[in-house]
Length: 111
Image (cartoon, rainbow, N blue to C red; front, side, top):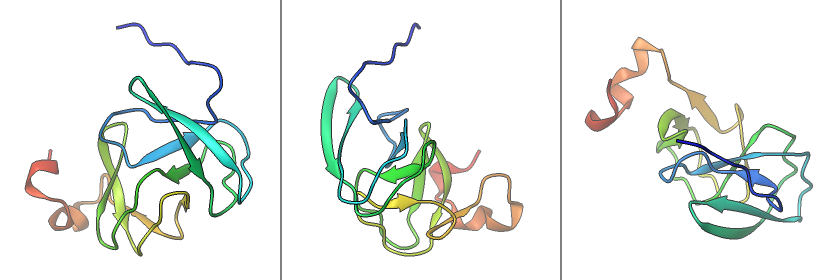
């Protein structure tokens, strides 16, 4: 399946189930950004600065909720995360490849 990147986006969502977008440049707090999810283009106001290549929440994430990128679980939130917040090690604990965290994952997310 061929993929293309549409111009005019500040961040990319890799999969329809993702709660985060990956930034395509350094972004500033208070900046309104555009990201594409499926065939729709959305706008989002950033609550913090987000460096190039980092993640920004595109929907609220409750504390303890599993977070998806690429359609896969990448971690568990350590605090509530608002849409527009930077998502990184300060509010996300990576659990991929961690056998000690497998009980944290929902049954449908276990591989």
